[in-house]
Figure 1 (cartoon, rainbow, N blue to C red):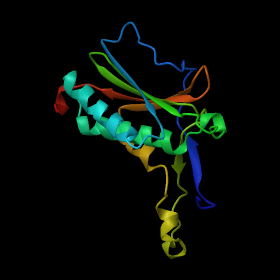
Figure 2 (figure 1 turned 60 degrees about the horizontal axis):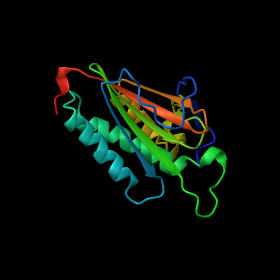
Figure 3 (figure 1 turned 120 degrees about the vertical axis):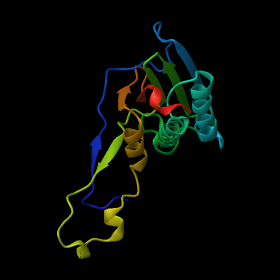
Length: 181
Protein backbone atom coordinates (compact mmCIF):
# COMPACT_ATOMS: atom_id res chain seq x y z
CA UNK A 1 0.00 0.00 0.00
CA UNK A 2 1.40 3.39 -0.94
CA UNK A 3 1.44 6.32 1.48
CA UNK A 4 -1.53 8.70 1.23
CA UNK A 5 0.68 11.53 -0.02
CA UNK A 6 2.25 9.47 -2.83
CA UNK A 7 1.27 10.36 -6.38
CA UNK A 8 1.89 8.62 -9.65
CA UNK A 9 2.82 10.05 -13.02
CA UNK A 10 2.04 8.19 -16.27
CA UNK A 11 4.73 7.47 -18.83
CA UNK A 12 4.22 9.25 -22.13
CA UNK A 13 1.95 7.40 -24.54
CA UNK A 14 2.00 6.75 -28.27
CA UNK A 15 -0.63 5.51 -30.75
CA UNK A 16 -2.12 1.98 -30.69
CA UNK A 17 0.27 -0.92 -31.28
CA UNK A 18 -0.83 -4.33 -32.68
CA UNK A 19 -0.81 -7.28 -30.22
CA UNK A 20 1.38 -9.51 -32.36
CA UNK A 21 4.92 -8.15 -32.69
CA UNK A 22 5.36 -6.78 -36.18
CA UNK A 23 8.61 -6.95 -38.13
CA UNK A 24 9.23 -3.47 -39.46
CA UNK A 25 10.47 -3.63 -43.04
CA UNK A 26 13.16 -1.08 -42.34
CA UNK A 27 14.54 -2.83 -39.25
CA UNK A 28 17.97 -4.25 -39.92
CA UNK A 29 17.62 -6.92 -37.23
CA UNK A 30 14.62 -8.37 -35.42
CA UNK A 31 14.10 -10.95 -32.66
CA UNK A 32 10.89 -11.75 -30.79
CA UNK A 33 9.99 -14.14 -27.99
CA UNK A 34 6.63 -14.83 -26.37
CA UNK A 35 6.78 -15.97 -22.76
CA UNK A 36 4.28 -17.39 -20.29
CA UNK A 37 4.05 -14.75 -17.55
CA UNK A 38 3.58 -17.26 -14.75
CA UNK A 39 6.52 -19.48 -15.70
CA UNK A 40 9.35 -19.54 -13.16
CA UNK A 41 12.01 -18.78 -15.78
CA UNK A 42 10.27 -15.93 -17.66
CA UNK A 43 12.55 -13.15 -16.40
CA UNK A 44 15.66 -15.31 -16.83
CA UNK A 45 14.82 -16.14 -20.45
CA UNK A 46 14.06 -12.48 -21.22
CA UNK A 47 17.37 -11.31 -19.68
CA UNK A 48 19.35 -13.99 -21.52
CA UNK A 49 17.69 -13.06 -24.82
CA UNK A 50 18.58 -9.38 -24.27
CA UNK A 51 22.19 -10.31 -23.62
CA UNK A 52 22.28 -12.59 -26.69
CA UNK A 53 20.85 -9.83 -28.90
CA UNK A 54 23.61 -7.43 -27.84
CA UNK A 55 26.29 -10.11 -28.34
CA UNK A 56 24.95 -11.70 -31.56
CA UNK A 57 24.34 -8.36 -33.24
CA UNK A 58 27.62 -6.85 -31.91
CA UNK A 59 25.75 -3.77 -30.69
CA UNK A 60 27.76 -0.92 -29.17
CA UNK A 61 25.59 -0.76 -26.04
CA UNK A 62 26.16 -2.07 -22.52
CA UNK A 63 24.67 -5.58 -22.36
CA UNK A 64 24.09 -5.20 -18.61
CA UNK A 65 21.94 -2.09 -19.23
CA UNK A 66 19.83 -3.90 -21.83
CA UNK A 67 19.47 -6.95 -19.55
CA UNK A 68 18.38 -4.81 -16.58
CA UNK A 69 15.83 -2.85 -18.63
CA UNK A 70 14.38 -6.04 -20.14
CA UNK A 71 14.25 -7.62 -16.70
CA UNK A 72 12.45 -4.63 -15.15
CA UNK A 73 9.91 -4.32 -17.97
CA UNK A 74 9.18 -8.06 -18.01
CA UNK A 75 9.01 -8.07 -14.20
CA UNK A 76 6.40 -5.30 -14.30
CA UNK A 77 4.36 -7.25 -16.84
CA UNK A 78 4.57 -10.43 -14.76
CA UNK A 79 3.79 -8.81 -11.39
CA UNK A 80 1.29 -6.11 -12.31
CA UNK A 81 -0.48 -7.03 -15.54
CA UNK A 82 -3.81 -8.80 -15.54
CA UNK A 83 -5.58 -9.14 -18.90
CA UNK A 84 -7.40 -5.80 -19.16
CA UNK A 85 -8.05 -5.61 -15.45
CA UNK A 86 -9.61 -9.03 -15.02
CA UNK A 87 -8.17 -12.12 -13.44
CA UNK A 88 -7.53 -14.99 -15.81
CA UNK A 89 -9.85 -17.97 -15.80
CA UNK A 90 -8.58 -21.28 -14.49
CA UNK A 91 -6.08 -22.63 -16.98
CA UNK A 92 -5.86 -19.39 -18.96
CA UNK A 93 -2.31 -18.32 -19.76
CA UNK A 94 -0.98 -14.77 -19.41
CA UNK A 95 1.52 -13.96 -22.14
CA UNK A 96 4.36 -11.44 -22.35
CA UNK A 97 5.98 -10.66 -25.70
CA UNK A 98 9.52 -9.26 -25.82
CA UNK A 99 10.67 -7.78 -29.12
CA UNK A 100 14.10 -6.46 -30.12
CA UNK A 101 14.52 -4.28 -33.23
CA UNK A 102 17.83 -2.78 -34.25
CA UNK A 103 18.93 -0.25 -36.81
CA UNK A 104 22.40 1.19 -37.25
CA UNK A 105 21.70 3.94 -34.71
CA UNK A 106 19.15 2.42 -32.30
CA UNK A 107 18.07 -0.67 -30.41
CA UNK A 108 14.37 -0.74 -29.54
CA UNK A 109 13.05 -3.10 -26.86
CA UNK A 110 9.29 -3.70 -26.62
CA UNK A 111 7.58 -5.60 -23.82
CA UNK A 112 3.89 -6.29 -24.45
CA UNK A 113 1.31 -7.61 -22.01
CA UNK A 114 -2.46 -8.08 -21.95
CA UNK A 115 -3.27 -5.28 -19.47
CA UNK A 116 -4.11 -1.86 -20.93
CA UNK A 117 -3.49 -0.05 -17.62
CA UNK A 118 -0.83 2.61 -18.26
CA UNK A 119 2.53 2.12 -16.53
CA UNK A 120 2.98 4.65 -13.74
CA UNK A 121 6.02 6.27 -12.21
CA UNK A 122 5.82 7.39 -8.57
CA UNK A 123 6.07 11.13 -8.12
CA UNK A 124 7.23 12.11 -4.65
CA UNK A 125 6.11 15.15 -2.73
CA UNK A 126 8.58 17.85 -1.92
CA UNK A 127 10.46 17.06 1.25
CA UNK A 128 9.35 19.12 4.19
CA UNK A 129 12.02 21.01 6.15
CA UNK A 130 11.30 18.95 9.27
CA UNK A 131 12.35 15.46 8.15
CA UNK A 132 11.73 14.08 11.65
CA UNK A 133 7.99 14.00 10.82
CA UNK A 134 8.53 11.53 7.98
CA UNK A 135 8.58 7.78 8.35
CA UNK A 136 11.37 5.90 6.56
CA UNK A 137 8.75 4.26 4.33
CA UNK A 138 7.53 7.70 3.24
CA UNK A 139 10.96 8.60 1.87
CA UNK A 140 11.61 5.31 0.05
CA UNK A 141 8.73 4.16 -2.16
CA UNK A 142 8.15 0.41 -2.28
CA UNK A 143 7.30 0.42 -5.98
CA UNK A 144 8.14 2.24 -9.18
CA UNK A 145 11.90 2.02 -8.99
CA UNK A 146 12.05 -0.37 -11.96
CA UNK A 147 10.65 2.14 -14.43
CA UNK A 148 12.90 4.79 -12.93
CA UNK A 149 15.90 2.52 -13.61
CA UNK A 150 14.75 1.94 -17.19
CA UNK A 151 14.38 5.70 -17.71
CA UNK A 152 17.86 6.21 -16.26
CA UNK A 153 19.58 3.60 -18.45
CA UNK A 154 17.70 3.83 -21.75
CA UNK A 155 17.79 6.81 -24.09
CA UNK A 156 13.96 6.99 -24.17
CA UNK A 157 10.97 5.18 -22.63
CA UNK A 158 7.30 5.28 -23.65
CA UNK A 159 4.21 3.10 -23.90
CA UNK A 160 1.33 2.50 -26.27
CA UNK A 161 -2.06 0.78 -25.98
CA UNK A 162 -2.42 -2.25 -28.26
CA UNK A 163 -5.10 -2.75 -30.93
CA UNK A 164 -6.36 -5.99 -29.35
CA UNK A 165 -6.16 -4.73 -25.75
CA UNK A 166 -3.18 -4.63 -23.49
CA UNK A 167 -0.16 -2.38 -23.90
CA UNK A 168 3.44 -2.23 -25.05
CA UNK A 169 6.19 -0.52 -23.11
CA UNK A 170 9.19 0.51 -25.20
CA UNK A 171 12.70 1.63 -24.46
CA UNK A 172 15.28 2.84 -26.95
CA UNK A 173 19.04 2.65 -26.70
CA UNK A 174 21.00 5.04 -28.85
CA UNK A 175 23.95 3.11 -30.25
CA UNK A 176 27.41 4.60 -30.17
CA UNK A 177 30.97 3.36 -29.86
CA UNK A 178 31.38 4.45 -26.23
CA UNK A 179 29.82 1.34 -24.68
CA UNK A 180 31.36 -1.67 -26.41
CA UNK A 181 30.50 -4.89 -24.54
